[in-house]
Image 1 (tube, rainbow, N blue to C red):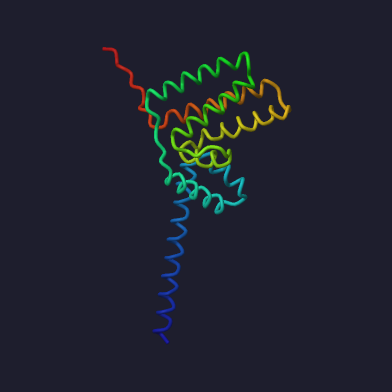
Image 2: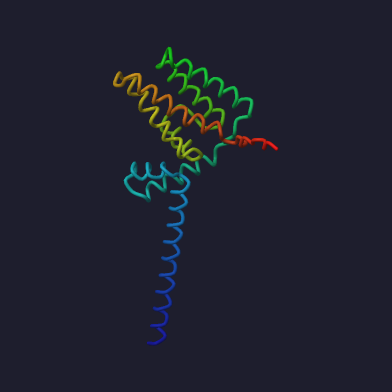
Length: 187
């Protein structure tokens, strides 16, 4: 009888230890995802309605992006795209709707050249969110505002805001792989 009690107690202790290890591992994984994805983590939880499903989707995004060959743009190409962006911003004064279309197209060019698949907005947002989790919120908002304008539901001010949001993601994507600027110290 004593032997059976010892075995039951040992099994219970082992099961509790396994459960505790699983719980600690799951909490650490959640903390890591929250830290990495930031606002995108909370967006995913809201979208899925539950933490576990959202975390599963975020891990899936990460695995999908790991299979892609994401690469930084060469410095000369980055400069060229930045100059094109400046021209698009200047175009906004005379042709806001056209500039928004150009901004979206330029952003798609950056995504494609870095190795992200383009063509489906939802897929673009998911995949870009892995490396640009904070800036991808700009893309969502710009897209929403541009869609409203296309349906005739908003004013030029919304296009200005869309342009600002497109710029937020554009600038963040150009930073991928860019070396930080160094300043010379005056002696």
